[in-house]
Image 1: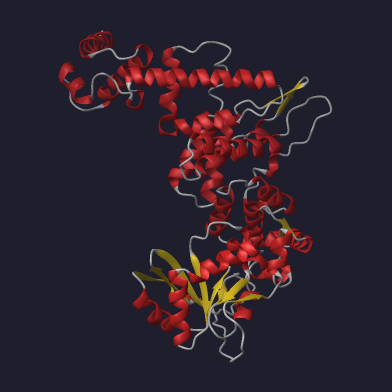
Image 2 (image 1 turned 180 degrees about the vertical axis):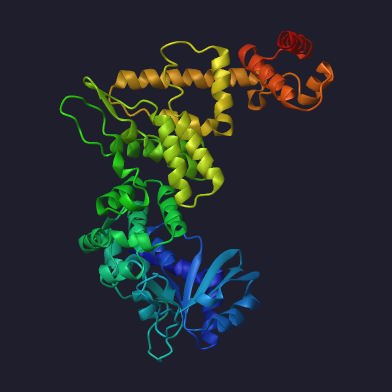
Length: 481
């Protein structure tokens, strides 16, 4: 606790916080550091953005902040928020809120309040509802500043590793059902347990998530997947019945076991693949940002299995689940309003995730390796991660054999890339050269010739301009005869 207190004092003494506290106190307004920064200081997590709450109105906030700031943004003046950059730090200052919800659209009716305690009580979780009051109180009370304000037992819950709501969870989740998904995200992010009463409310109110826009659901799901350990949060959403609504293809992977035929638990397998992929991201690309496309692909790569499940004797098969899964992934991600690039990339990875299997049983030709690279295109590194993380067998010898085989494939790709610059595999002749050699105008024949030369390039490697011209003339003559 002494270390946490020292971190909080350092935060309070930092240039932007101290400057703002002095300005607001001088104007007779309250200012408090709230939410995430206070929580993260206690948890010894990095504090990046600074969030404040104030008794001042948005116009008063802007007037006080503008002289101190390098820049200001009206990110949500109608919601009471003014954002600024002060001394290299991003800050947001929001007027005390006392919102109400209409019970139908789940959208809040924005109302400004006059009490920090009331503002904190309406927040999502007690660990996010702590504040450091940085200025004297307007009521003239003789409290020392900074003063910790904790209306719901957030500090105790923080020490216990418990996630609970300041008000009754039924009321909190009814006000904003997206808080149920945020509970899963914070539980995963912080390694906390959700309080039993909150779990019960999530299960009881799961259907309310249908009232939330697809865009808000998408954003919260993405935030969960971008944590370093999203699996506990996904389990929580599954157990509460929420994932059945927002991403039903994943809970559907809990296939019933057959008494005669056996297969691995596809739901558990998919969660393992997701986490193994995250670990591979970190080890292969330690400086890169978390990759949402890779994580969505890991979670969704087998969603075609329930639709393609067949029992053949004592074996369960899932023929073409890669193709079916790709179509399902595209459909679901579009429904969640993911951008087109993400939708296409995830669907393509799902479609390609089985391509590697069989490599270790028979040697691939160089042309097969080239096609693997060509088909993956810019997704090749993500395909490497997905394919490697898809190995979840408990058979150590089998796992080692697959790992060795993929090491070999990556080695061959690297060798061929060095020899042939595979990142930009193209025919030895371009369209202009094809038309000049054959004496033809733009049209279907140019495309056919280009594709023929590309196949020759993939099959045999670089031909050189002279050899490629002869191949082109021979093809054209055979086509004309």
